[in-house]
Length: 68
Image 1 (spheres, one colour):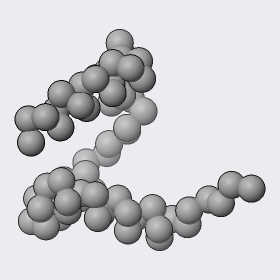
Image 2 (spheres, helix red, strand yellow; image 1 turned 60 degrees about the vertical axis):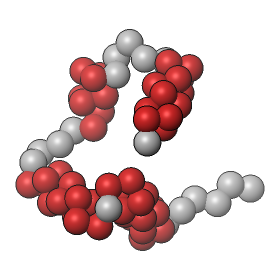
Image 3 (tube, one colour; image 1 turned 180 degrees about the vertical axis):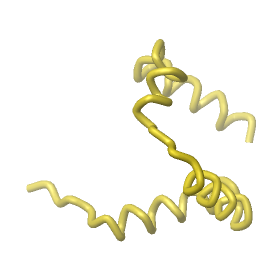
């Protein structure tokens, strides 16, 4: 049985990750920037990640994590 997270749980977890990664001020800034723009993640992903498969994305994420 798979439990689905509520919208509230997803929002809380997402905000927590943003704060952890960006800090409180930049996380709030990011949310404000996204809220002001009409942002289509699916279209953005097609343009910016079109050639990446799961292994490639994982490699890039690990390389980025090493820079932190």
